[in-house]
Image (cartoon, rainbow, N blue to C red):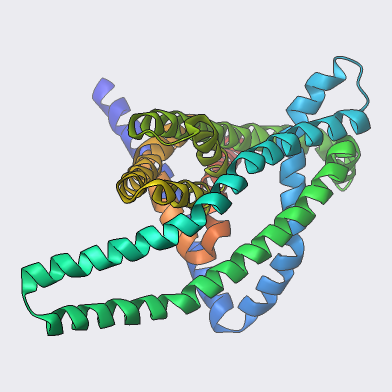
Length: 352
């Protein structure tokens, strides 16, 4: 009897995994059909319009618990929302105040150090190969490769500017959404029949709880990145280690491009001080990024979202390939929400 129960539990776990895999396959097929038959561009245009509103609602949803705490001190929602924004922007401005002057002062040194490094590299190649013609061929190959990267850098810069624009508009929308959070929530519930509103409200609360667990996991991972960066920067003796590790931790909240936004200024400043420190910092940032992607992220997010780490990595790869940076942002929350939906459907079906 005990063995049969164990077998049944194993079968149920396998079925849950199969359900999730089927949903992901359906999403892939749907995306492929949309892309093949011309709906893809239309959906992209619609999505670009929706993105700032989604960002704004997400910002409001994340900051809502802080606003609720302020309400305990009888602070009105408008004043509370403005105070939260002032504190957040003050922290960002203070970080930029420390970082930008250092980058400006060291950027000229970086150019000279990189030139010196390039000349030393050629000298080492000449000693090893003992033939100037081979060294020249390697130089030409590297220059050709560098020129090939220019269009990609321009495209990445253009995409970053677009994302920054969406983010800024979303931040403004987020302030209004935070102030009027209760009205928006009531408007959504009023779209349903009165008899279904309690059920919908409970269902949305469960989804909100699951998504908030993912957000908490993201902040925990960002804190671990901050802590690891601080210890590593202390060891290699980077100036202002607390400021730069804080920058790495905050920007790590942004998937994919966040670690580069945080790491590039630190590497530039390190190269401005010395070549050795520059390479040490670059290697350190790469190691921290590997730890974040394959250790901190999967382990913490699997605990917070109650998902298997392998499933999280698979979801990041799947959604990243399908939807790019946005896919990486939504991957874990979407999979967690799908899990909640499946559980609720099974519960509703069993109680019919």
